[in-house]
Each structure stands twice: as structure tokens, then as C-alpha cells.
Image (cartoon, rainbow, N blue to C red; front, side, top):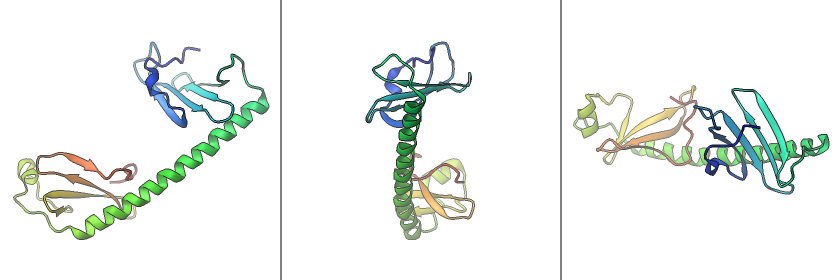
Length: 166
């Protein structure tokens, strides 16, 4: 159906949405969800063309409406589980971010990164030699911090939320 990924290593068998570039595409417009539990099922599509297909893996046939509904339900259950796990990782990272923020103080004016970038360091803090940039939601709550080392290397907390924050 023209949805073969150029590099199949991007496909995961864990029920997560995988995005990939199809042959002939310049952008990664292809997507797939492979649900390998029970009866393996592939739900795949192409964003630019508006396509979506559901196929039983290991069999060259379309699913019956009942099988397709069961497959979609299984994928939805897996999606909800992934969302719960992601929320748990975000919560754990938020706890660490709050601790780091509370333990930090005002940055030194002579911090190498601030000097190189000619920044004042307003709204940020320093913990040991690292600068901390708070990542806040719309209500001002800290969810994550970006750590900037003296050499300019930047890191967010592993598992921490980064989307929808400023």
C-alpha cells in the first residue's frame, strides 16, 4: 500500500506510535502501531494522504469488523497504559526538579555560560556549577529543569515533562 518504511528499525512492537519516512516521501509521513500481544495486528497510515489500514500480521487478509474492533480496543488499552506510565515518569521527575530548584540559589554573575552568552541570569538559579532553568506550566508550577553546565552542555531531567512548558 506504499507505506513501507525506508528504515524499518523505527518500527517498535510495543504498541506505541512509530513515525517513519515512506519511499518517495521527503518527510516522515508514515505511521504505524504494532500490537504484538495475542493476535498480532498492524494499524498503519499516511498523514499526508489521509490513509489508515488495519491488517492481521502473519496473515495476508483484512480483519473482520469484529476482529478490527478487538484490535483497536487492544491498541487503546495499550495506549492508556503508556499514558499512565508516562505520567508516573513525569511526576517522579517533577519531584526531583522541585528538590533541585529548592536547593539552588542565585547564579554567580561570572558563571562561564552567562559570561559567554552575555546574560544576566534573571529567573534562573545555580546549583553547584550548573545553572538551572525552570520549566513551568501555564500556572507557574515547575515540572522540570534544564541543567546547563559551564561548558554549555544542556540536559533536561530524564523522564521529565518538556511539552507545553515554558
